Image (tube, rainbow, N blue to C red):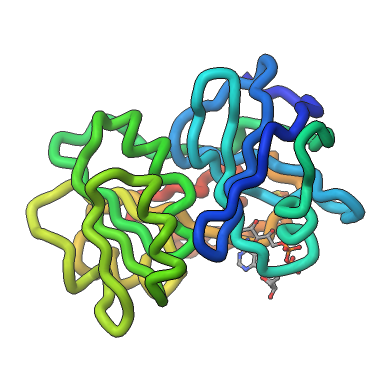
Length: 220
Ligand SMILES: Cc1cc2nc3c(=O)[nH]c(=O)nc-3n(C[C@H](O)[C@H](O)[C@H](O)COP(=O)(O)OP(=O)(O)OC[C@H]3O[C@@H](n4cnc5c(N)ncnc54)[C@H](O)[C@@H]3O)c2cc1C
Ligand code: FES
């Protein structure tokens, strides 16, 4: 069920260049893997969408790439500070798959630790720019890791139900290889629940709000 709360920060932990922001769960439902939360970044007008990375007992954890003012403010939070959280939002991954394979690229690994747990530890292939970025692979036990110039699509075994999250070019490449994959897309989002039309994308010739129809979409 959708809730808005202001839980306390438990910790911020570096994971390579990323930060794992752990907050108290309170009565917030962690939702389905691939769903997201709008986090209020201190000093910023608009909240920022973040996938749930992990849901340990009593906590919610988000893996954040500090690429701009909002994400940097979230990564700079201190234990005990409050942060506004709204969610869970959007459509997550469909977990009714027979031979799951998780595929992630860069900060696109963010929703995969929670998805990995929900699916009982399936195989995973994760791609990163450098070994420093690849420290995030620790959150997905036993994942196969590839570093550029090798791409994840070169390491993907055939015959699996692919669930993927990563940069747009990676998602297009995964879609070409596995037309039935489930792909988690991104778009700039202002509200996260269908009110602002800031996240509109063209799907099958129709304009759709990614926060409502997605972020997880069937590749086909
Ligand atoms: C459903 C969803 C889940 C997400 N989950 C995560 C996550 O788990 N961890 C994480 O680190 N990030 C995640 N993101 C991306 C994150 O929300 C953005 O990086 C963040 O909002 C940028 O805010 P900023 O103020 O730091 O930077 P801004 O100054 O807002 O942006 C910096 C640059 O990134 C571009 N940008 C911003 N937002 C997006 C976007 N959504 N898609 C494409 N380009 C964008 C801007 O155009 C600009 O060039 C997610 C996005 C969506 C839509
Ligand atoms: S983010 Fe406002 S409609 Fe999707």
